[in-house]
Length: 280
Image 1 (cartoon, rainbow, N blue to C red):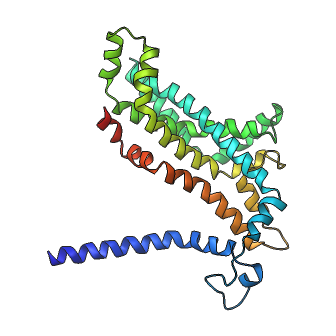
Image 2: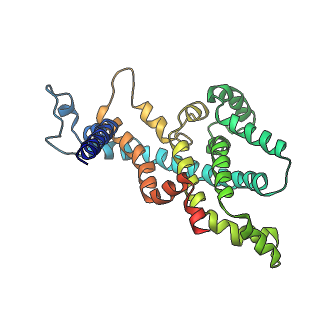
């Protein structure tokens, strides 16, 4: 019993050390964001600010116009999540539920999965040419479509896993009672998939939110630039505005973290693939 308690104590200590290791950069970024710039350059450096200021947030978000970039990121990512979820569900449902050839099902799923492993640099140049000829360069619509496409493999595979968890008998009972397949989908299956859809939406939103390469190449003005582009633009050849860059980084990381905290119950249960089966 005593040795078990010692091992448990060591495990807790290791987890706390690991958490501190992961959280320290974020902790340091937040402290930098609320520290006056002269204090940041002071030697020896102080960990906690002697004078707390929120001027870097005001300066970068209002004076530099980063609220526009924040709005662009929110609109683009939310639209991409909505489109990606609908298309992923339209792919995952027939592949999982309808009687199709196992060989065709396996080939389609493997092809979709292979898209996720495709390096973005492979497609960014051809896509840039397509976007330019379509007149969508420096247009938020191009980023929205691209983010939706790149979220498809992850969302499709995730929703397929959830569909497998929902008993087929629920839909079959509705069909026996006279419901059409479309009605059974909306009234029986979709409510069961609500936690899965929310979890998939949160994760794909976080993936789109942090994307940099496509936004950097396909946007040129604040009309379509996203928030990560704003972080990079604070690094110039003459100076690095550390406290404003930390303020932008704090806001950029706060959005997906808040979303994850709000939906953490659904994300955790969805990732374990257990909640739906229990409800069913």
